[in-house]
Length: 271
Image (cartoon, rainbow, N blue to C red):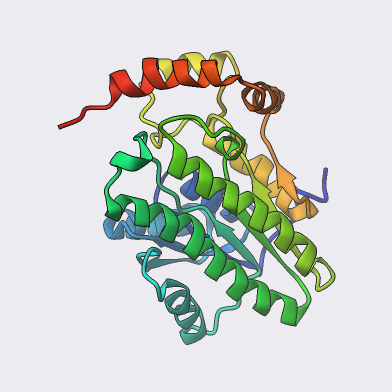
């Protein structure tokens, strides 16, 4: 266990989506082990505040970088930011994400592009760019955030599940490609996490936590960082989620249609 709790003083982690939720918890988890940070978000005020708080509370350097990762040149901007400050990343955590419960055919073109640009283009570009640099120095860790939904093509989350499935497959292949160069790529596929991403009411969050159906973001990020530092290829949190993957994977068409009719058709407001 001591190995995965290793001191990260003198190392630098780049964390995307770091101004709130799981991304902020990743930043705090790493800072708690002495790791300096570059915290990236498109929420400028929240980012500056959380970076300052993280630096003050943990005694590390926490540099904020306001950046829209859906922009085509986002990866170039991130690298230029690091190079301009002579910073060299040891860890990359691609956490930034978006969620929407809506039929794919009714989602706006702009929203559809955000899913693709953020979950596919940004993750791919940043992983490739940082992977090259880490391979050149012979070490480094990349953690990409997928989701348990990558195994669950259910109605209403087509764009989310499909793009998260891409992240999982891409990350697992990249793990093999970079392994001989000393770079470890981990993909995390969490089930329920107690954040505001899915819009779950607070009372239901508390109940789900008591039932261990979901996990706090603090606990999840601690375990995910442990697995990343061990060089694990994939992390799924909790036995219930592992069972759920199998259960949903074998769900018959009639059951999926019931989900559509009872949850999607009755809860989506259409003009």
